[in-house]
Length: 234
Image (cartoon, rainbow, N blue to C red):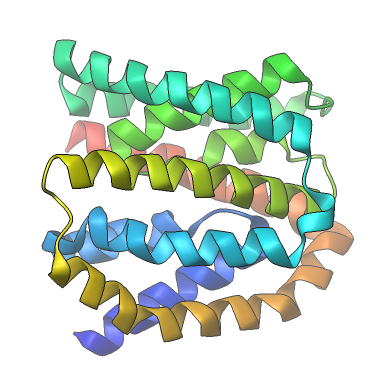
């Protein structure tokens, strides 16, 4: 079981290190089956050093304006997600958000990519906050917003945004007593696999950035939407 856990973390880090998001797409389903007690707190503790590392290694390309507006949107979206969960079931919210992501991916296939202005950044952050709350998979909206941007900008801006979002989620979990020493130990055990995945992603980035980054973003965003729909139907 520990080998499968390490491989899942490494694969998730390879994907996230290459396209800016995707760790949760691998880690959440895997650990929900293997070690449900580490979801989400243990995975968020892994995500903190991972996203900080990614933001720092391409920090010169961070879109500061987009980061600001998406963070504001993320805060509002997280609060809205919590409020919505008080009114509707989590499965229904996951189904709705997942359907919206799949629709956005389909529309992206036929529409010309646009610049990330303040409205789009705030909307992407809002959707990310709601989706993280509903399905623990919040990277897709931000990735769709930055799908046409250079790889360095996409990865660094998403990573910086995820640092804030992850810390907010961890703070909320800690205040409700859902982060403990076992989660910290688990995260420490997984960090070598996470670092190995980020190292391997360095070899994929040039190939993806040259031609395949946008198709990869759309593919994994679609997977995120389908997983959210499956969670809602399940």
